[in-house]
Length: 452
View (cartoon, rainbow, N blue to C red):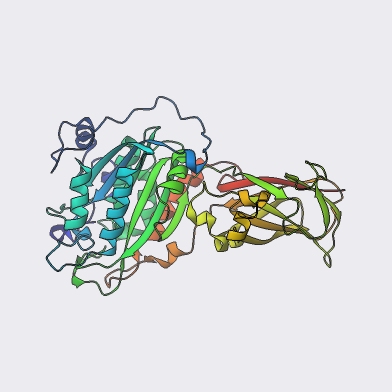
């Protein structure tokens, strides 16, 4: 996140970043009030001063994805020298990069989406500068005309989190997220710098990190020192961070961040209570019935009465889930199979398999047609009394984060310097704000098993 003129010093010391950074809070306030920003084109809507919050927001319940609406979305595109390789200047025979294609299409979709009432666009230069959709889209397509001399990840995060996350606002930062302290001895404290940068954010903050890789044509600036001209033979990562109130981020993930591909990691999302039901006739095995709905045909509910079950002849029932309102990562059957857990005081019930809906189930006309996923629960012993269970999905950090992290990016490749340490800081901040054994779940479904 720096240009060729400052390739040895990417950021100010961590302690100074939160006080001054590469732009001040006064600079930002002026931009937010629309009094100091100099833009290449007029903004599509006037920049507004973010609303101050007198009290912490009340917990919100996420509506279904189809009902999601967004009063305000802010987009920040980093335009330092290190980003030029993603957005090379277009010539007559130039080919677009994957970054240009994906980001341009996403911006266009956001601009046209009727669920968004107000959009604000910013270039992150030496400070955030208000821009228009047309001008920002032109930068993505044609290249950065005047790259910033220096930008700072902690300063950017501090600014966005403290001033652009009103109760009704979601902000998206597009950047390579390469961060290195000025003093190499401070590298072990990168996680602390990130946590400090977000420390004054709203108490219900959620952050979703989307990782992508793109061809890169230009000069690459490693985090520690030096530069690599004529780069790069391998794809280079870039990221979109979505920040905002947990309820809004969850909706935004499920709607405006769909079908992007790439990788995902989510922090601080509110636990979703998704539409669900035990399906009394779908792929059943053994002798049982839905206790909270009676023995009528096709009944659904959340309590299962087991008549007979053993290790040799287990009872199996299927729980239908509608996961359209959760991020795509949590809709992946393989991810669910690995991470979905059945909690409760029992060792005889467990998740046996997770499957996604098929064309056949969607066209079946039965109760199963209403669900996107099916979880088979296997019970290997008849319970002696009612046992309350929870089908829960913890917000586990996915393996790609470690795979995309490196301690030395002097040889550019499909990894980012200290990415894992940045997300360590984000995760530490979120963990400190959450309470309760299961506070980090992204969804929960209540179940119970009992003897007939």
